Image (tube, rainbow, N blue to C red; front, top):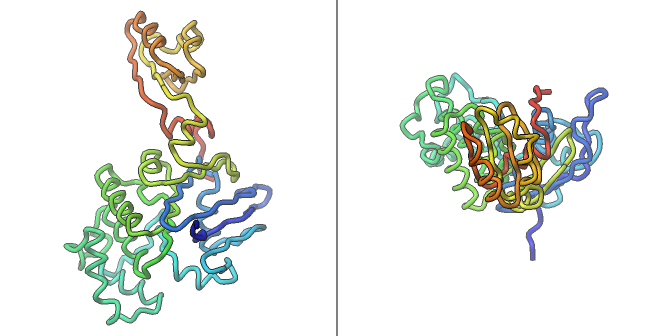
Length: 309
């Protein structure tokens, strides 16, 4: 028998003036799963996280958590079971890494003495044992993000809400963060993750929620969504004369053709005939690959860059 969801959002609406930021959005998170929320800037991802935390009240709809608790009525009880890593660091710059953990634990009712044994464990998990006495200003960006994650674990939460936790990190720091998140999932934690990195979403998320203009436009397992919405093969062509191929007879070998910048994307059920035809065109750079989450994201939300807001 399936476990009851840890968190359910039902028909959420949020408006600011004449702008609808979240528009009839529903989803749920099961125990032990990572639900990824992806969408362009301004799609409503952060507002959704804030409503789940009780920081922003929905204009309509409801958020129901474990044991029948509801937000905002039972906000305190729900927050006691949540861990949060926001987009921007909120670490106290005047405290050391260890002190940041101890002080934050006090908000959950832990005494300094009772929590002290857990500090080395959390610092070790964050690979920061050697930085216990350092202040956040002395840490790299990746270290600060790992300290924020360790701080989110002080109350041993059932559910973690992570709002773009690896934005601004270099590849090595991102991979270390991913390793720690995978460990938490293996321990049975649940994660609600917003991200702009499609490789991050595919690596970590068991299910994806794609939103745009505040509305859900797709939901499902990453590979199933790719198979549902995309052709299996993608051929990228760039170089001298590439753009002219978008309107050439080569279109007959593709189900869909898109142009972005100087690159032509051919989406096809079988790339062999297209690749054979392209071999007759010199001076081109050709990259053949399987369809991925980035292709899905761009098909569902468009290639046009959007500003925040």
